[in-house]
Length: 421
Ligand code: GDP
Image (cartoon, rainbow, N blue to C red):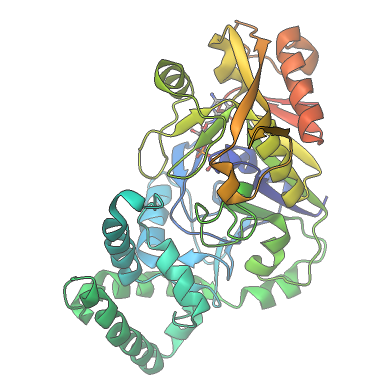
């Protein structure tokens, strides 16, 4: 398949980075099309373990061209730090293997400040922002008050644009009781801009000239339920995480995807606030959190954990238009005697298997079925037939529930810990 999107079908943190890393050698170009440094992909390979936030996961593969599309929130300071971490492990990064869209908007230091000021103002009503400036960034973008990366090539206009925006932002920051915003606060930003300048180019032109006979992979951040339009609004991110947005955010709006691979986790996790129907609590939750090392890749904060949610995942698969699903972390469930699965919801006294409107989700109660656990280590298994029958029953039940083939089963974080069906 030439053009494939790899996307999350849950709340994010499904293990997309690991699945993208697995397939990236089959592709010539890997593109990030939305989001910013607010979530992390964890990739484990022969070079080490990396928490990637902005860099496409293809950066570890020779001869793969990695692109940051116009849809991303381009934070030059974070990007530079990430590039350094990767380079420190002797992985080359040059304008040959990393291209930044001149149409990507720049995430400014004031976006981060405003994110923090607003979360503090909201106090106990907060959305659970990762405070990377993502929501202020996207709201400014759609207000047409961001600077596009390509503007850096005209010094005078670039500086003028920044000064105009800064005067406006200063008013807002002061209304929050923040400190006056001056150019001094942008020193690190300007230094980072100089460093990333050589990577900025017309990505659409590059793709138009180079995409024939090339295999392109589109890499998403977060999952279906965090999509601004189709997710659990307002507990979403501020961009479209869905595969149908991939060509637009990547720089090739006329391209049609050949395949969408959804990534789901064998149980549920959710970072931040918002309804989470199949959530576990107390000891049961703590045990699963520990078994799956469920602590945020960006923030280190403990993730909320729960049973696999068939209702939410089927919805997630549908809105992504998945052709196949990769399920990760099946090995984590090996300790459980009984494995819970949320098969439907009870809303206002009625059982439903349709994913409810966001504000109704708060009222939804999970209906749980329990499966017998397999109680043995499965992390060395590479063939589906070799999985214990109980594990296969679990997989086949989920597959039927989400109405999409579970084509890949991940049984460990390492590249090779995968079962193809
Ligand atoms: P992403 O943002 O969707 O890439 O998700 P994360 O960064 O939260 O990655 C999920 C975590 O689970 C990472 O630490 C991976 O190394 C790890 N992981 C991925 N797949 C598996 C698996 O099948 N088994 C285990 N034990 N760990 C996995």
